[in-house]
Image (tube, rainbow, N blue to C red; front, side, top):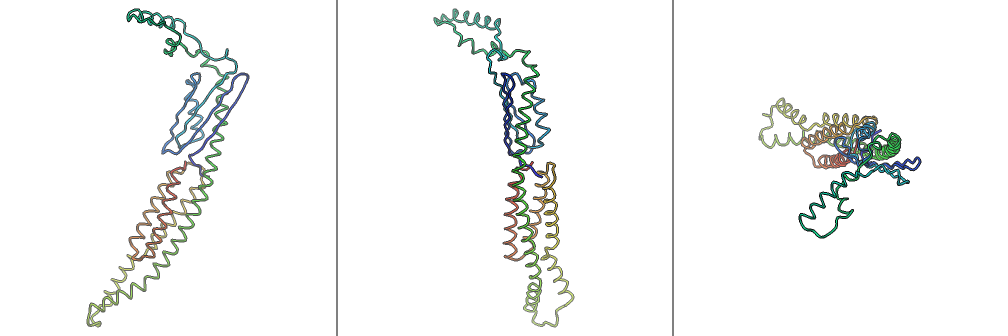
Length: 293
């Protein structure tokens, strides 16, 4: 079953006084792109988080946000770097005296220096917090996967319906092309008679050869057969569980190539109209395929 690259998932896990919330947003992309927004305590776990994503997705632009809430303020894994704070205060005091600034140095000035507050190194290695984050991420991932699969199922229905319409139109084109053969034969013979005042000098063998060449130019059977083959492989690819977006794009290119050839070979407004209809359906399918994983 095909999967869309558009999806959303959210997971939340609580244990004790700690709650971890994870959100995953996925949109289409040619490759797998992963962007993370993590609390400082999980920055060192970024590679592990990306591995979780790669285990589920092969394509798409994935945005991950993880938040950690500690109900008990004493458990917030941040500490004050007192020596750094004193050093900044001393520097600011010297600067104030040097510039003869009258104002006092307050806490708001010191907080402009982010390294005064730092993450406790022990907190960075908190395995319990990491386990909660993995559980929340797994819940979010499973939800996003389900959403991508559900949307993929809707796209599948649309693709199958449009391919059926194209198959019907190809049948109409073949019928119209066959109907044109006797018409073109009669037209050719008439043109020859007009050009030659004496019909007896017509070389029937040469005329048949020219007619055969004309038929070859008008015959679209080969193109229709190849087109149907591409349709068959396209529908088969939709039922595979692997990432098939690139393969579908390639098949659509080949379908479009056959449609162009049919249009250029057929000297008929009726056939040309149907070729335009096919190309419109192919374009609608192509737009949707861009979102297939």
